Length: 198
Image 1 (tube, rainbow, N blue to C red):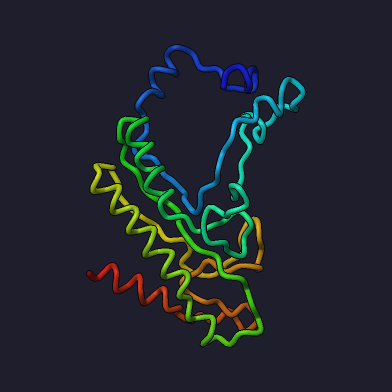
Image 2 (cartoon, rainbow, N blue to C red):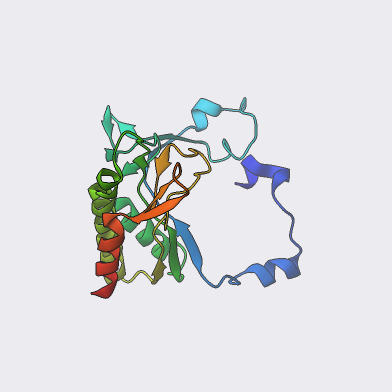
């Protein structure tokens, strides 16, 4: 990192470094999907423009030998791969001395299809399967000693997504953007409620 990022790294005094070490309360992790990674050092060589998007010297891909890493969604970067959450949690446990972890975001995107009725869009079985599989994977990590303290589903309601606008819906509550923002619980909201009660 010091070689690739160089003078763009912040500079800390010895006192600041001592204050920073071990100063976190918990690690917040947003997990949606996983990608394959391969070394791109030879690809970049010395001709790369230094930036946060090239500092890692990695080529990321959602496919390997033409096969997707998981079930695709309407977003090109989001493939359903629940095992990735467990693998990430185990890596953090082993690499960073098992800090307290909160899953601060985890969710599934449906396409925003205005041709469907509200009753049809409320039946979000894919989101229910996504949550079930990811929570099951998280439980496996907990059973293997990962220090998970909390989990937050993304999102409470449909919203304007930072990279997709209104083209996808992550919410467990359907928001009718064309009719005074009326809200309707999706089946996933009922599923999560029942999950939390048991």
